[in-house]
Length: 65
Image 1 (spheres, rainbow, N blue to C red):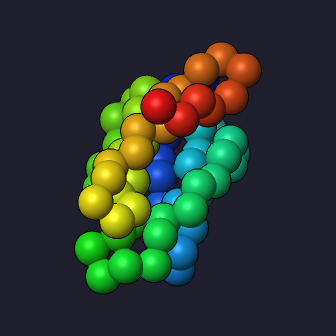
Image 2 (spheres, rainbow, N blue to C red):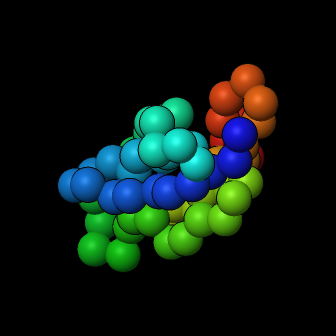
Image 3 (cartoon, rainbow, N blue to C red):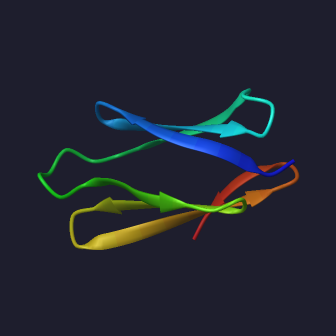
C-alpha cells in the first residue's frame, strides 16, 4: 500500500497509508529549518540539520536512505 499522508506534529513526522492507518513515524529534528519537506506515494523527505533524509515505502515497512 502506498503513502497516503504525512503529517508533522511537534518533533515527529507521522506517516499514514491510503486508508489512513499510521504505518510509521520519524524524527523531524528540532532546528528552525528542520521537519517534513514533502512526500509522494512512495517517499517521505525530512530535513534534519544540513541533511534531507528520504524514507522510502517498502511492502514490509519503511527504509531510510
